[in-house]
Length: 183
Image 1: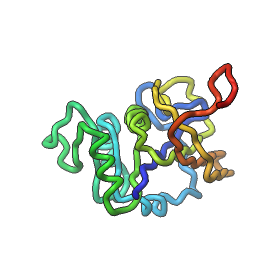
Image 2 (image 1 turned 30 degrees about the vertical axis):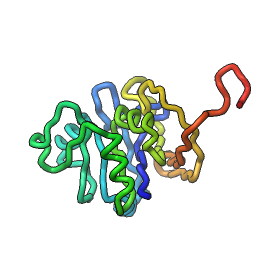
Image 3 (image 1 turned 180 degrees about the vertical axis):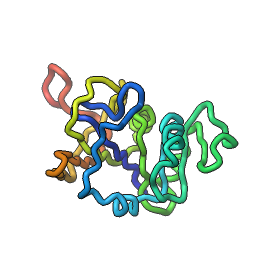
């Protein structure tokens, strides 16, 4: 089964973008091979805001044959270069069951939250950038979803100080309530 992988850059204080959506603080490490990384995906998922931001930047910078934009306001005629859906559960479940490579969840903390709450995210890959921006769009906006993360890989890029952390997502009861013993 295909996996949905949330691959994102985050500041050390937990933000994926500045309050105005800017991401100019993200340092691109020369050791990261984006071409090799993109070979793992044949589809990309994004919310409306991420789509509009990436469209303004000349695309989402990834050579994939298929993009999916989740929105309650956009119509298919508004997005000629992607498939528009207002039903993430149905669309992502069908994608995961189809033959193909993994699926990249690109940007968008709100879409990440929605898919996490639907238990549709399989892996989280966070590049922690050594910068404090003080405020902005959090990695995970307030959520009712709970999931345990299992570290599968880590790498330090010494030139920039970026730390890449890879986790598998395990759903179900999360051990250790605040103020109580682990169950």
